[in-house]
Amino acid sequence: MTSLTRRLAEAPRAARTAGLVAGLAAALALPWLVYPPVAMDIACWALFAVALDLLLGYTGLLSFGHAAFWGGSAYTAGLLAINLGWPFPLAVLGGAVLAMLLALPIGFLSVRRSGIYFAMVTLAFAQTIYFVANQWRSLTGGENGLQSIPRELGGLDLSEPFWFYYAGLPIVLAGLAVAWRIVRSPFGQVLVAIRDNPARARALGYPIDRYKILAFVLSAGLSGLAGGLFAISHGFASLQEVYWTTSGKVVMMTVLGGIGTLWGSVLGATLVVQLEDYLASAGFDGIGIITGAIFCLIVLLFRRGIWGTVAHRLGSSRRPAPAPEPGVAPPAQPDIERTRAG
Amino acid sequence: MTNLLQQAFNGLVSGSFYALLALGLAVIFGMLRVVNFAHGAFYMLGAFGAYVLLSSRQVGFWAALVVVPVALGLLGMALERAFIHRLAALDPLYNFLFTFGLTLILQDLVRREYGVQSQPYPRPAALAGSVDLGVFAYPTYQVFVLGFSVAVCLAVWYLLARTRVGMVVRAATERADLTRALGVNVGRWVTPVFGFGIALAGLAGVLAAPMRAVNPLMGADLIIVVFAVVVIGGLGSVFGSVVAGFLIGMLQALGNLYVPALSQTLVFLLMGVVLLWRPAGLFGAEEAGA
Image (cartoon, rainbow over all chains, first blue to last red):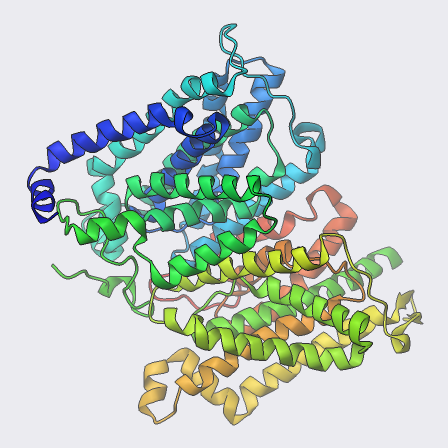
């Protein structure tokens, strides 16, 4: 084990390539391993969780309103597919564009507060979208939701969930690739700098609010890709998609996997979707009790999350990204004093 | 004109609930730096507490108004000792997430027991009927809710502003370290203050039982409006939270009259304006690093 650890640490590039190949293989094999519609759910939620982690883990902003972007895109993609007969990849893209347009004003207003306030404000703005979706019945179908969304793609028959998984997977992979690219880019490094020490980042001349807004909009766009694809794969979009429980669920996936570890978000999403599917098929009525209890336990005992714990044990220090234990800095301290050792 | 006045009165009554809930949130936040997501769930538990006492123990409204908040306050204190306390030294986001998980558990536990349909709860006999307010007749119970909430808010204000306990709590809220240095045992007050905030939520719940649908999700949407209320009022400010509570109630009621399509979203639009104009809230002081 130790020699493996050392080798992993010594050969980050090889390890990264191996991880990438293993991840791709798992993604391709998924509909053989689990019920195909569940496989699609896992892929969508994984992208959603990664999008949230871009903000939570790498920018240090906890958005509790990402359901607005996931759900807003779900409705938009559905409407584009139903009313204009757009092929599904275009409809999903349209949904993502709307999510980014929504994120622009919401992000602009929300970055005026940080920390716990940011969470409350994004939550409240997302609830606005929920009320709008609830009241604009002629467009969204109100409580009935948007039904029979077609899966159109150049006359191909994609009604079989197994095949639709492979048709939709490239969108998810493209979204994940964008997220990885952002994290490894100079832009991503600035985000991490803002997370760790906003005052210093500002002193270095970075317009930190603009960076935060851009990160927010990018994260919303990726969430939109995921939400739009989710709606198309289910054939309907409902109010559930824009409700605050959806925002909470994706936060839970990210925290379970490990804040600031993109692979962890993928893992967290996989586990939560699988668990919910298992509980639902076992006929257990009380998913909220289980997910709520898991949420509380992670927060109390397991704040690094699964991936974060593994990375910590392996002593991997090659990336600046995974924070020690996120947010251990005393809250009363102003940002200016929040320097990290080393 | 009568219509307008009546709507304004409706607004004050629904504002009473916002004010009581925002007050509890603000008191807890001030002392513990915890934003209690489960506040809406405790409001719901308050209403269910009254319902269960009446339906299975024949304990009426007036007794419930005392028993339920006390019981929930004790439950809150136990939760604070067992869990919230452990997360106190960390980023406040962790307690926000913890209380979110708690909300899911509480809501689902009640839903499994009582289902999602609303439970009936009669008005107390002494408050049945309506009173003539000169311009229009108004249900007696609603008038009682308004008067009672205002009295509770004033009592809390008195407690905080004029008593020794309140002085200690205010000092600890502002500078916990200095207060400790002056020989005050700040830690001793943390748990009771949390319990007190929860008791206020429970009180609002009992008050809501006779006039609002008693169901497991009654606090779910309300809490998010209350978050907007405290952002508007300034979360650090107890006074601001209460004033914003009544203000938002009025705004929603009048919105209902003039722009019904927007009545639910008005509060969030106002929050956007406040964030642009005074990010710290109408009555809030700018926090370091916030």
